[in-house]
Image 1 (tube, one colour):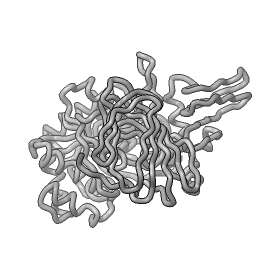
Image 2 (cartoon, one colour):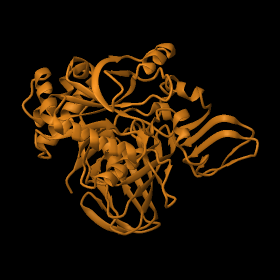
Image 3 (cartoon, helix red, strand yellow):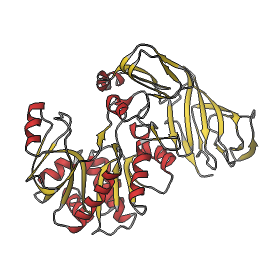
Image 4 (cartoon, one colour):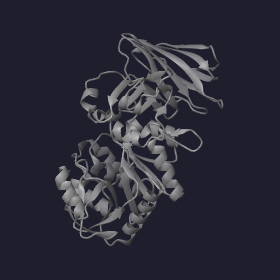
Length: 438
């Protein structure tokens, strides 16, 4: 089974645990049988592989999320990188070209496209496999999965099928309605449109060539910034006559807000926190090494991270986005392909960061033009390279780099290497970085 997972979003609705780099799909809140926590992307990837160990999974995403994907899934997963955001049709066209031109998938093979972040169980992935098979049969150009509505939602668009059979022809699509209209749709067998569909690669690439002047994946990638922003629904779905929909009545939840996300949590507290006996329907997610205590609070979510602290009524948490947009600060936490970093302190001319380097990984060999840096090793051992000079480092060692000096750190041990990094300069930004070959 070929699967394209759409991974986008800025993560503002799940602030402060998410940001422009760490979107909601990378937050580790789902408890596994061994007691460890996994993220949405880890959970979905694991579930796909459980149903089809040979599944070819490609994630369509922005370049800001690549490090987090490699950190959580490793380097075996395919990644179609969008140079910039151009909505879902360009993203899906680019990913489809990636499968054919980079991965060598046959152009007549089918592919399933779905969001990376639904909360689902095994039955959903069995249904994806069936959708894949429907696309392979070729009876329709597009095959959608429609979700059986559990209530008259105003959040979703609706698919109107010809009848109530398991697989039927699509008659129409309806935009997000009011509650009364949604009730009428549902009474006639309408389904939620969850953005899940399958097609043969040849079909989608033909559509892409009709709308975009390009030759292959590399050409499309290079032209990406010039493409018109347009959704897959507007560009393809609403203009296609040959569409079937497959009904799905299993578990499917869109965890887009704190209110819905906490519904999927198996426990009320993640991290260091205490609730007294007078709390009711309260969830705490604490990403910091400091205690949180809640007393007599009801129907609330409390989220704590280096980005900030949220204390909200669960229903009101859905309206957080415009408030988050008013906050201006550097990214305070991010997962990288080599490990992670957490900002500890920010001053006008300095920044203090805790850096964790995973075993067997290293930073890029790089330099900064507008800041000096000092590393202090606080855990583990490894080696550093500064302007070509290599040395072994252990707990307590201090390494200083002046602006312009090339440097990297390598963890060649089997345990984590942790540094306290102090950056000093008048213009400390993530853009002040130049990479080199070591």
